[in-house]
Length: 350
Image 1 (spheres, rainbow, N blue to C red):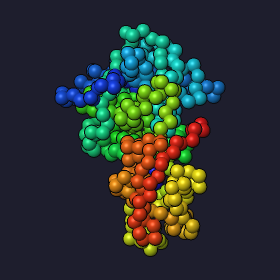
Image 2: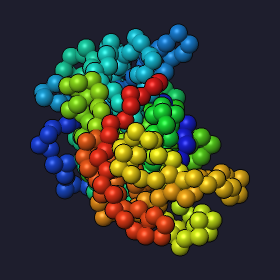
Image 3: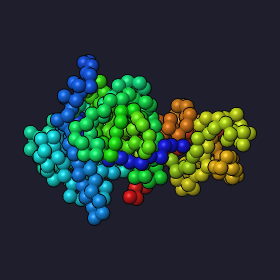
Image 4: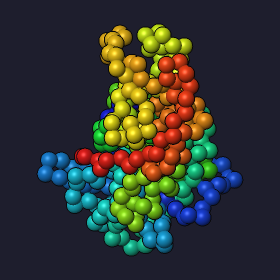
């Protein structure tokens, strides 16, 4: 259904944020020029708890004429005595302003003079093309200001890091630039010098398989993170689903091989109240158990749902809690559309 990852800890660059910023540049930069522009923006985030010390990255943003540092939720959750170290070696105490574990984002403030902050510009991740060049800057294993180069391998991925509870992080960018422990929270930058994501995780024992939270998610959540300290508008259906495939379609005697099989529905959740149906027959295919007999989700608001990635990416980009969506399902061989008012995810237990 989605990738299961092991989080790696990284370091990031500063980023310029303005509600009026269109995120476009005409000039194309090579990696040398990107590094020259961005390297002074990268900071190292260090935190500690009773058992361990964590080292990663963060990048500075400007919001309402104030400087903040953006990093990952897993960089600050459960850690105290946070510090931000700038490229000149100067370190300053840091405090968490707001965080969202469901997107692995955190906003931090640092008691540093304004001369330390060299913000980068925030671009739009919606225009990313598979195959385009991106660079990652961070502090792998404490090696500060390290740059790696790769391409966008895919967009709209769903990843499970272990920090977001039972929910996958939606709409992540998959990229091939090598990242290692210490890179988390660093910027992913395109050839126009714009930050299009924040690196968050890698698959262990893999090569060139990294993931980043897209900049559009940052844009969407940033005002709430700074004003309220949290973000609670993630759409919530209250269903357990699995990707449809050929073997499942044979077991269910249907010709539907894409979409999402609804295995379980929470009775008092949004989908349950709207009348979506879960499975009632357990079958084993290969060595995997499934609950079949339930609805097959094939569309949302007319948008085709191919798999869990497309489903979660669409909701993350286009829906918020409280909104009513039109869910198209196959039920007993017939296509029907069910209106569902999305709920709010329960507080994350970490």
